[in-house]
Length: 191
Image 1 (cartoon, rainbow, N blue to C red):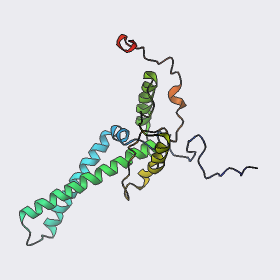
Image 2 (image 1 turned 90 degrees about the vertical axis):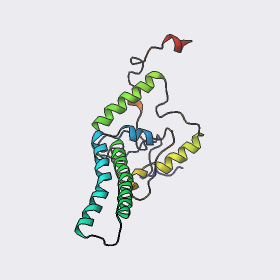
Image 3 (image 1 turned 90 degrees about the horizontal axis):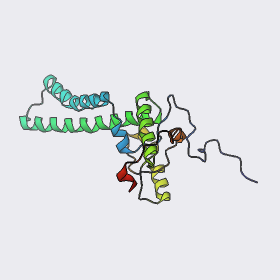
Image 4 (image 1 turned 30 degrees about the vertical axis):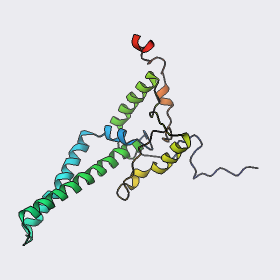
């Protein structure tokens, strides 16, 4: 006699059934893929956040001057504020891009890019999520460690740096009409 299925446990096929406001592309996107899908507005936001730290520091210096610091000290403080802005801005836009992959934010552009990229991989005969040198059980553990880590990016920045097949989405849409879209091999590829 088997135990009744646990409704809180994910399905055996690895697809996460929890609802999202938009169609999810990937529940555990690879770092390089998230960065590759940054939007131009993300880069603008990143630049704005990088500049915000020094601007705030200069504004505070105008309002409440700190007596006794040299110009060199102020420059060093501005550099540090800029560095914190660059790092914080990157983490913020990385999280925004990850949210689009996970279906928490509007992602029509990313859906089109993903469909084109993955169908091209299928047509070339490549693996959808890239080759991995790790054994399958280590890939599963790495996926478990990084899945949904983007939700706590402000607490512990954790990125998926492992190619694996545990992404929590239905990949059958990439194989629809795959034979029709197959790219013919060049002569050099056949030899």
